[in-house]
Image (cartoon, rainbow, N blue to C red; front, side, top):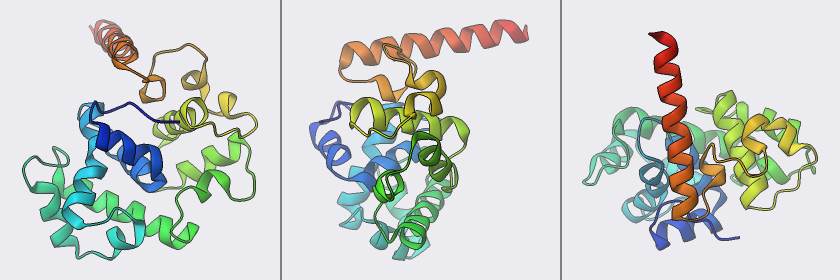
Length: 191
């Protein structure tokens, strides 16, 4: 399936065809717009010449951070996020033989196991891992038994909570509205 997250056909094509690029986009999805985060892997590929885990992990950290700072920046926190992407790449190389898709394919894991594997990655906490698992199940056809349950509310059919639910501009608007409502509710609960 083709993903439609960024509004940029080249960036979406990379996300749709490269498991590490998609994993990297999810890692970058914090404190920036979703489109910016998921467009990051294409910027990395254009600037480094590759987005494969070996190339990312093997690049000089200072050089890699400079790639993040080029205009337009890959992320609003280029130094720290460059380090996180390299740590993720190194984990994929060390733990998964450089094959990001093995995280959700190797050994035919169920949803709970995929979630456990995702949470073990640098930069992937509980929520990010659940959202990514929902993205795999809803949009990429990953059929790990129990993935909906393991991804919690993000796996609910027909929900518009996260990047897992974005398939077009209309669904993007619905996800944004849901996120804004949740932020407003959290803000009023604090008041």
